[in-house]
Length: 151
Image 1: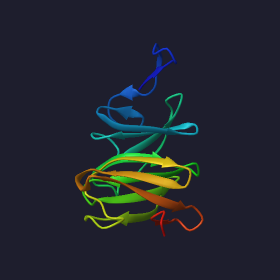
Image 2: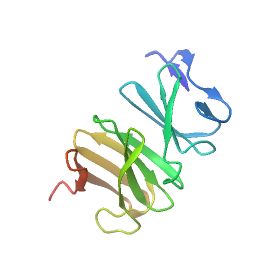
Image 3: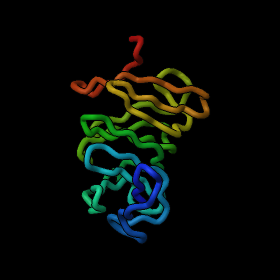
Image 4: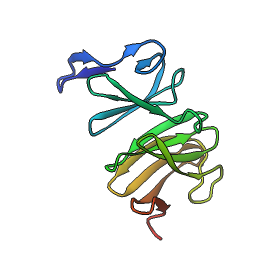
């Protein structure tokens, strides 16, 4: 992971190439939250969390995620991981699975190939590619429940 300054000049590298914790071979998704980087590598552990110095902290999703793709993290440090093989979104807190929702289909709250997600406040935006839409879900942090913003 190359860190660049605001002028685009590379200032340092984080992580190492290779196999195992804290190492990467084929990164497909990266996002940051507070002091952590969440990295998806299609050839390594499902999701790895490292700090900004490149120190491996932990990984998660090894037993639940089959083909993780997009990652978003909210201000409560909950990680939302989409799984291409099940069309679900799985929610993790500190590496522990809290909840999974969705599934294949075109109804509200169902997905057909999530390719991106973004959190803004209490809203989770989900790029639902094969349904040609962006779904907006309200996050209820105290109940870990998701609903459409209209209801």
